[in-house]
Image 1 (cartoon, one colour):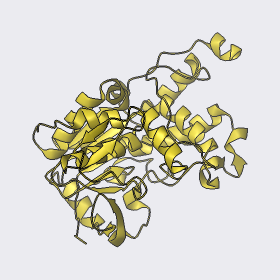
Image 2: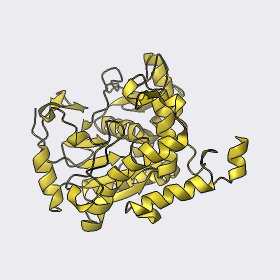
Image 3: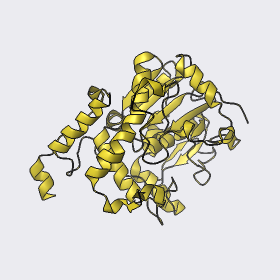
Image 4: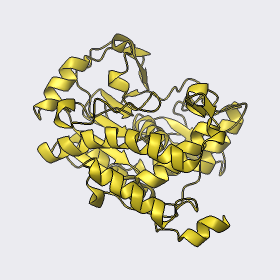
Length: 329
């Protein structure tokens, strides 16, 4: 095992492309190393035909990934966490606002960081020295950081559906009630938006302080132009632009219908969170709002986030739904 004090950070707000990024970057690393990936739908082989196949059975989803050769660092974090280097004392409401479920803040949830799971490596675990990670980031001296974030309304709707179909009661219930019995409005204002704001503002604060180190990337742009936007993310994490001839292939292989075909082949969801043989992968149409989020709800949500100090101009909001459409839904 190798000691990792400060890997580059590719963080996401939950339901903002986390697994797409894990798949696409892992596929890119595998192809860069002379590996082979067979497209289950087109039967086309990508990479070296005689190279090793990608190990879907053994793939756990990190949160650390061995990326040497594709990036200049040995390891990359891809997951959910509060921005390293953020000082909670800088935001008066932050410490008193809990996340409504675990999983938003990997590096502060009491894991055994001496044995952090890693994929694409010859070893299964590696240590991360979280205090050193925090110190270097707080001084603007850490490795590059990226946050990919979905607009808060679409994120809340997606996480609401995700939680309802989760196999764990921690996620499929809220305060002892099944999520199916909770209204979207109550979930939005009591749980989803405060948790979103708590994670997002940590990156907003560090991006304002160290703009060359911390980059904010809207999920909607990633979905609209995945190859180009992911190339920009990787360039930031690498510290310099690089040619990545296999990137378009890696993104193509990470398309939702292909990943669902792999889940069908394995007989399970790739992230391990679904009931029975369900899939965690969803088709995304950025910019299309849920009919339950009408103009009034949208305005109230924006007002709440504005009061909490979030820069509303950083979000790519879906088009508002008129109240009449909600009533008819």
